[in-house]
Image (cartoon, rainbow over all chains, first blue to last red; front, side, top):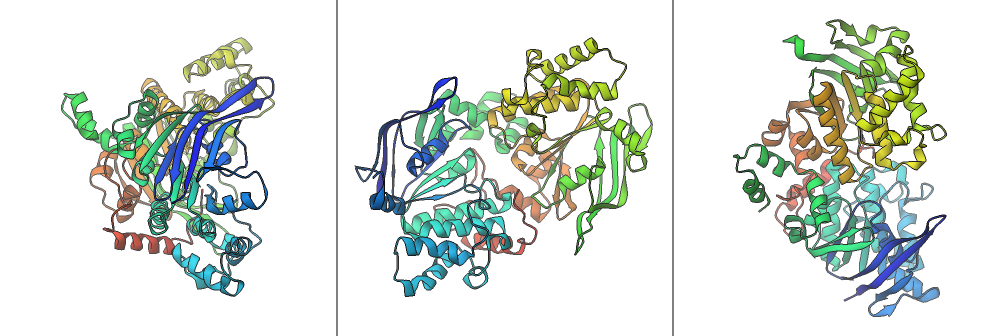
Length: 276
Length: 301
């Protein structure tokens, strides 16, 4: 059981001419293995700042980030061990894979660097990882990223993230660059892997619908503050905060739309009915 | 009957003349009604943008229009064959009769010229008879109309947010009161709250000025809410065309059904999303293999 805890984390950026900008304001939450938390909010809400602090691309201005109760080491072997535990899947599978290298190379790298398996077992492990993300190892292993579709590329990125056998996965908009008809395939895969390996997943997204179905819990971020959190269905179906409600009402929802247009004049009651 | 038709597209085909040639749009026919919002749904590579560019004659080589026609039924009663216009006539036709909001339009503004002058350009070109003060007033009115406000006339693009820049582009497209506005993925880069506001505004303006809109996006749930009718495109063809409500309630084509189920509902069902259950695993596997066969077509946006 691995836990990553944000305890009263604050992040300020210095903005030229405008003094300091508060990107995260006293944010606390705990991500643990076996659970999926969705982090939703508009751009500028602080979602990516949280991802940057988790991956230690940025450091918090105040507060603590604790892995299993200990602060993240600032450098050296400790930091590497931390990064082995907490892996990232990025938004853009075109930018996150190196066009010069084969798929084999991409997945071998973390295996070698983190010494996950002995070197004579690396080839087999690469193949096993490709199969885990439902890719055919024989036909993909020697290819380069441009020879694969967007969805296949994102699967490679997921396989690479899993190579070090992490306990926590940070997925920052992992499907927003993919064609719509394959998005759910990739999310379903992530959900399967999450169950199989008992991963803790932080799903960062602006899409409330997938956030609701994909995660156990939703945290809503507005201007650096967590304005609402709770079980996924509760937050979406019965939001308490005004901002959450505004977000929910602005998101396309054909079911509610058509329920409303065909409803009897008792409008309000019907809208509630459609949400139940 | 033809009175309320604005645009008639017949057997329209576009081929990218590369090796091997790609038939991006194949025999597309549709009628756009006056005052209607028509949603054009499809994934990348479906030909929806190519069709829109083709109608506006904006395609560049190697794209070639290989057949078909687009007839514009002008409010004056004149029928304009867009394909037969000379370059000069085409230039006058654009913006005046039919305008376009391009993909990534918010990045289309010139960074070193203020908003007022860029808007003014449209009038200088198409309404040269206007005096400078009339022009400035018209530009200010437009900015007020789209909710940016005339006090922003002297602002430069970088001083505006993405949503405001998008509104400036919409103002520009509205400047000459065109009868047709084509919007190609106008909102995906915007936050839902901003997006909702802009869409409500377009809907109001349409009621006010009576223009028609072709709205292109892959976001089917959004189209279902804002369109009168929806055309679903796949591999260069329109596979289904119906009212938004019929597309939602009784989709006929397999692909339409698949697209619909690709979006889990915000407040209802999970669609094809199956977390936590093993029911539907076989369907999911089928979807995964379908992804495989689509690989050749799939180009990420």
